[in-house]
Image (cartoon, rainbow, N blue to C red; front, side, top):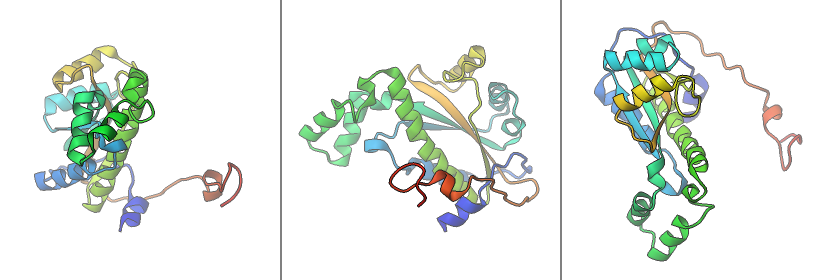
Length: 216
């Protein structure tokens, strides 16, 4: 059940030495690939890192967060801004079966195509898209008994924490200027099982009916 995965999912930062089978990793990645996407643009790339040298660099990029170094596998979650370009975007729409007139309308609409608004707006929309895929991967990992932790505090074009490390990892991962490493997803089997404790705001504090402040 999806709700069971949602209720029991937690951020796992301590991992055992047990490796993750490729078949399991592929199921987690497939969940991300199948995530919903705005007009099916799919503006994401996933890079699986297991190489110790690359993980060491990711460890530095993340401000030395220990789970990045300890995880058997790290998925680099990349926003692909080039996916919004007409050549890529149009191709996806054609594969979806959209007719030429509708394709032209979508590609030339500022409401539907953020690349017409500028780099900032394109990045915002791409980051939004990526969060869906990452969420799906964490839930699939939970279903498969794999612990996961989303690491968003990293050196990249969004934080400018350390532009030197940000550039190093872009080169290491073969990323272009149209690719932004938004977050890392560390994966591994939990070292010792702990109880899931979700500290969340009360339902009526986050949910309203018709207008903000009216209880549902």
